[in-house]
Image (cartoon, rainbow over all chains, first blue to last red; front, side, top):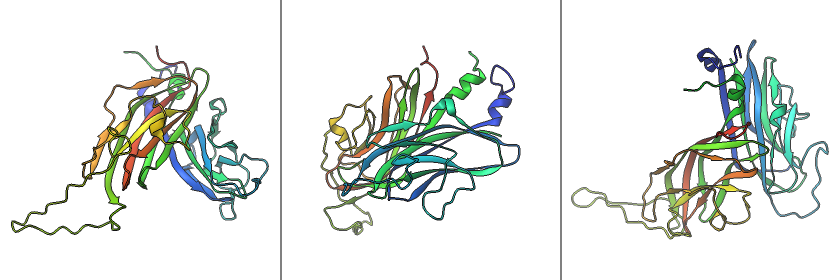
Length: 147
Length: 174
């Protein structure tokens, strides 16, 4: 911003875009699109907040195994347009927040709010990273778009 | 009038409490939005609304009702009455909970403030309720969840929820 105080011009150029996925059943290995944002040339944005609530996991019939051991059992990730959305979990996230224990709420550390300054289509996806079983989760977050 | 600095502006993050039209089965509940506070963070809640568009009486075996006009051409709907799980909590309610346990009914867990109550046992859709109390600030660290609960024993409710809370990454306002 151009000054210490927010001016009316600033208010016109900054736009908060909240998003929220209420409690949703996530099947194993499937991603669910939560929010997408397309940035044009010259526009910038920040993923200012991203939280996930792993609400519960359906009955365990075996010890759960992660499809991708790098990530949590269930996670919400930020992806650019290179994300692979056709063949299951969409690859490497630019940033993510996840949870392993049912009942846990995790938040993307605000100190690491993720700046986006390249023209692209960005998406937040929530992924059940377990090979079994299904899980229920909710996701909340907000983009700050710099018009 | 006070001014807002750019750092304050970017520290106030609005988050949504948004439930698209959803059919909630009798005595079921659903987490709409959750967040977790740490350190000096706080959030304020000032906007919360819930709409009941229609319901299905699951005991009737049909989701339509034939109503024939009287001789005067007036349609008289039956005076439906729901059986409530928790008397006084309406057909449904939206509550804000700390450390919510999704495996246990919300009516056995303490809400952070009085729940937003939708209608009564005899209400006929559409029914609307809005939070009218003054904005409240919550600053205790830990997880918080907005939860909607169907408080009837036999009506499946078709509901939407809209709301917003603002997370403040800095210390709570004095």
